[in-house]
Length: 289
Image (cartoon, rainbow, N blue to C red; front, side, top):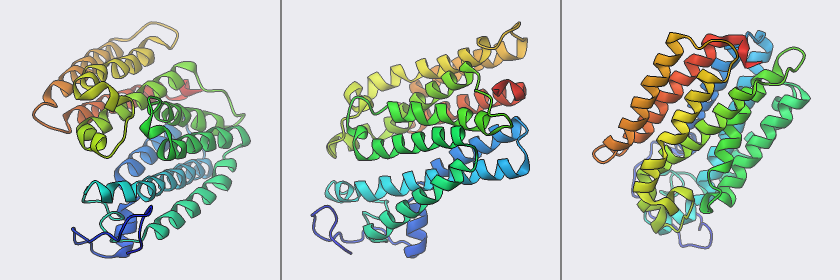
């Protein structure tokens, strides 16, 4: 394998089924599928036409692929030096130049796909993808590591709303809830790997807070997002919405506590609350715009 970031070639420690499989796994398929599915669910919820629905899904998919491949390619040298295994590029399953090439191609495809959703919608989405690349290349190791997540998640309801006929502005509570869920996603995703990331020289916000501080902070944006979705829309608050708010509060608090025994508990709790919040958005349907 080629040297990465000036380091010596890495000896493969994990057996991968092949270069194509390694490239597919290097895109971070879990987040790619989750974010694309979220965008598609929102697009279906507001009743976009089949053509617009497909464009939104394709644009988000291309953007997420570019971000995932950029992340693994840029971190390959650091992962190898830190001895972090289970990553295709760092393990030598696929050359770093191939992953950079895939990231570039996906990023280039994202531009026309995004703009085809509408000028405003495309601009918002491309700004979110640019913020995610900035996270990979710079902000991941700073106290502003949360910001690209907030921008990216806030952009999803904005993209869907602006892609609708007439390009209506999204409701403020959908954007605010998306930003808060983005912060929660960052905290929950980083929490299990804080110590390993610190050893690799990463000093984002969760790493500065430490595992305990991150665990205590995580429920705040989760509860905030749900509260905004429940209380933000005009009109009386229904019993169902209040029940979701109570359930989200319980899950948000229990997840970080269980994290002492199950590394992914906090992230699982964050996903559960995000699913409940998505359900609130879909029930409201056109309220997105």
